[in-house]
Image (cartoon, rainbow, N blue to C red; front, side, top):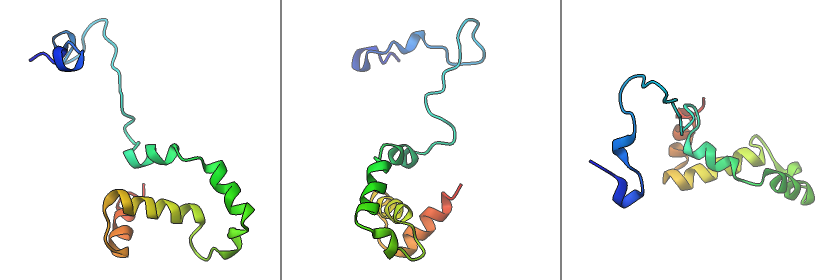
Length: 96
């Protein structure tokens, strides 16, 4: 089946099995990088830290840092978590 028409890719020219002489392996997705981790890399953490310092919010933090709180809330949104238990279980399952 050729994917050339809909996507501009000629799938008949791509190696599919074993070691093909002259063809290098290309990994498009890092093995230990999740989509959520990739999204977090896009956030302007310097601006976030500057806002925390500007509003002296670091004095209000208890056990969570502001960054970990933001990460937990973003995870809850993206994962569709409906309770704190959902958030905790989901984050714990991705602890590594």
